[in-house]
Length: 133
Length: 219
Picture (cartoon, chains in turn green, cyan):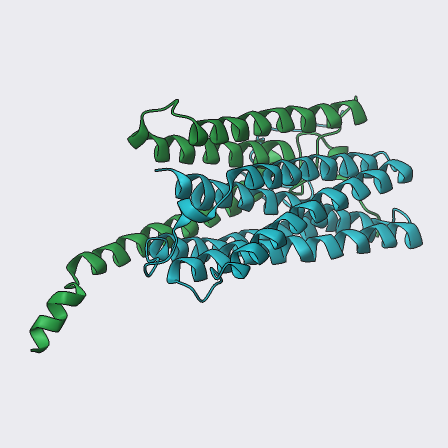
């Protein structure tokens, strides 16, 4: 059985996650994509550390800004390093990713909501001690 | 005179799967998908399940991060300079891993060895810095048994570090396999899976340095 590379039919078939699109210009295009990804990810990382270290941003807005930067950087990694794209040949990969993101969201939001709600409704240790008297 | 073939509608997302006219593999008349696509897709599913496992550690950390039991909190313990160097190491190693993938596409063994070696050195530097940080914390009495916050911290960051260590072993294995067997199809699939694994670890580290270090140190 021969190995058929997905790029033999551009526009058809599925691409493997991580496979780069080397149609035509080849190596230079591949390196260029990674360089662009490195520049974007590096810039977002630098921005995160700069905001966290300095007093550039309004304090209470800091967590949202840092989380937004982190999500943006994860997107950069997915597109430029893992080559998960919105193209038709990547539909299966994107669907799997979307399911993973849903589970991660449910797990994080559910845990944090339930635990903070419990800790909110639970009496403090002093109250428990006074109830036992 | 033969009847002209009916025009094939443009259907890039394969909504009409299974049509006889669909020449793509894995969707009908084109036959099964190539092994490379199937293997990488399966590994992608594994990586997503690994990320789900990490999200449980993150949830645990988020719940426990305030419970310092009278001990030191994130702001007293973490050194952002160390974290910045670790982050730079891991990001650059992700880039050099991508360069190794490009070298693989070009079937250039010398460039592959060089880029994998660079990836290994950067990954080993990351692990060294992390182990030194852990050792310093434990030496000053702030080990995982100090508080629930530190238990969650060591579990989460240590789990990522364990993944990176395993990745380093896998990296050496891939270099040895290319050396011994060359760029055979099954070796190419393993290289693809390895680079997916390595990039996914960098994605998890983005969440770690944001949630644990930057948001922890933030006043």
